[in-house]
Image (cartoon, rainbow, N blue to C red; front, side, top):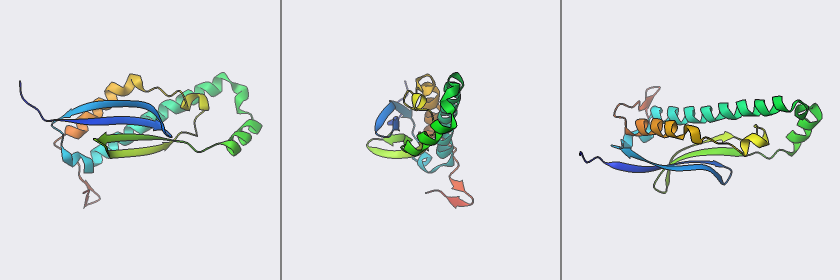
Length: 148
């Protein structure tokens, strides 16, 4: 058996200060250059966009199942009383935040945003992150500038 360097990362999604999901995952042959790569940025962006697509779809399902929910008066009142809430996706290395991304939660129906469940996709998400974090061929320049 070959001895590989293993680095432990943490994947955590929160809604305000409440943990939605938290997973620890190991990356064999971690490449420190991945922190400053477009590949990592694109991967985290893609993960957040996928979560947002699911939330949007589920919000539309809730609204279709409750057609009287979306009357104009209710929407105006809801917008006035809405508290801005955000999801934050963080990838941590030890106690340090390695990369994070914030995206709005208050735009989704309350039944959807307070019951978000990405567990069926976690294996795929962590696999994608592991591939990027251990990749030897990364894009570390953007518009001719080095990302360091």
